[in-house]
Amino acid sequence: MEFTGKLTEEDLGEVQRPGRSKMYWLKALARNWYATALVLVAIWGTIAGLVGHNKVN
Image (cartoon, rainbow, N blue to C red; front, side, top):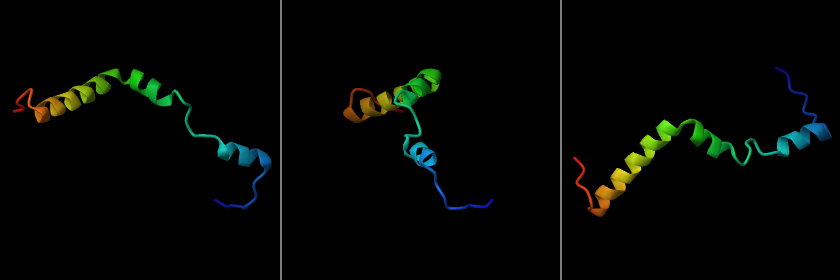
């Protein structure tokens, strides 16, 4: 692979754009709803255990 070190105005504009859209993470969570639900349940259980509402085994 060879790099020339030259950027055109079009290339520079493309580099400056953000890599992901604003809705990327929301769409990712919606697509992976089962894994998201498991993570939320684990977080909820940990917080409830630390607060003292529930004894975690």
